[in-house]
Length: 258
Length: 69
Image (cartoon, rainbow over all chains, first blue to last red; front, side, top):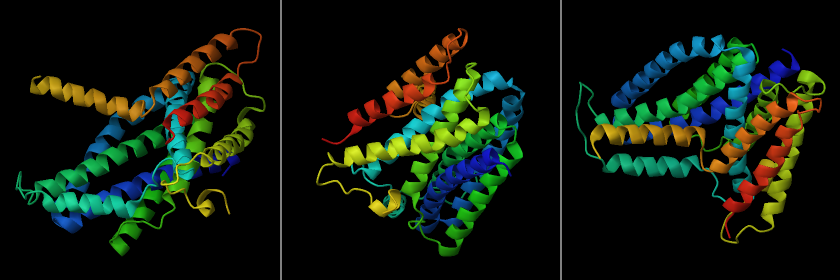
């Protein structure tokens, strides 16, 4: 695997793992509070819709000329990346609450328990079905987008797909094994890393799609990624000084290596 | 609003949220930076630095407006 291939694998793996953790939390809440069978149907239906979307979008994305693809996808990745990075910096500096899978699980569980049971289309519990379906579809859409765009841009869809499959299988296996929200996954740190990767690749591909040429070509990524990371960490440090006392800053060990 | 209209509105809101997210200014700056890079690439001046410069400006602007006071 080349350096760029390794970066591609790492970026897709981390992004997909984060999305999978969120989807697993929602499905666990639906299954635990309501009905595992209906939640399972929801997962199956969500995966079927995702497969259909991938079957339509996959060939379409790979058929777009590389220049246009890099321009559009680079721009989108950069917008996504900056949004992820913004949230990660705000969380790490204490300006936004940390993403807490335990709290999300408890909230989903409470909402699921209070909803009334209803049977529709042979599904025993429609609420559990729709909760799982939406969770898998919405989080899965991001996985599909990341795999297709990263893979097509790097001319290596199989590697991007492999990274996504490994991430999702790993997270789902752990979720099934412990049947509890994956609260110990360092999700906030992973989101920070994914934000850095999406921003870096988005900048690189977007500029190339707009006909700019990076000094050193692909090797420029080896400079861009650490520069973006250091710049974002710098803003974490600056914003921490003005963090409100009531907000709980991210543990230093999670982001700053302290 | 009828059901079709509401569904279309919900569909548009979903994609707006999916693509643009919390801060529309980020999307606008990225779009402008791509256009400027394309324009500059047609001249003899190097254009690669425009995207990093745009990121260096919009990230703190977006962070500053979203911080808790």
